[in-house]
Length: 109
Image (cartoon, rainbow, N blue to C red; front, side):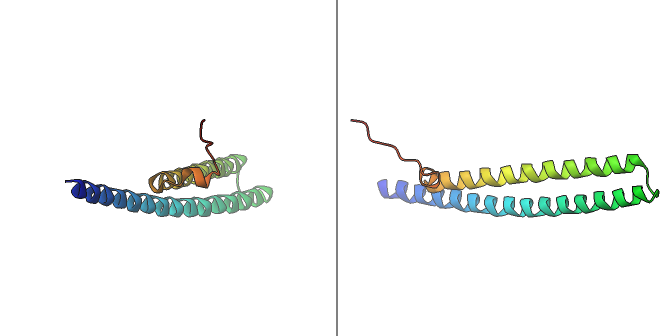
């Protein structure tokens, strides 16, 4: 019975670690996509500002481009937070949280 419990616990741990690794990889791709979207929004804003100076777009379109950039930056920040949370969850599954953050617990006397 004890061996069965150990084997089951080991299998559950392996599954949890694999899931955490998948989540880290997924969140990393989300960050990369969000960074690309931010760069595109920056380029779009620059283009819109040039067009505004040339008189081919309205001020409202400039404001909309600024709003699009802020939204892209917010999505990028959220993606980076989600990625960090996934890394923390992986550390927890591996039991490395204290090491990662250089936390040492002194024994009590």
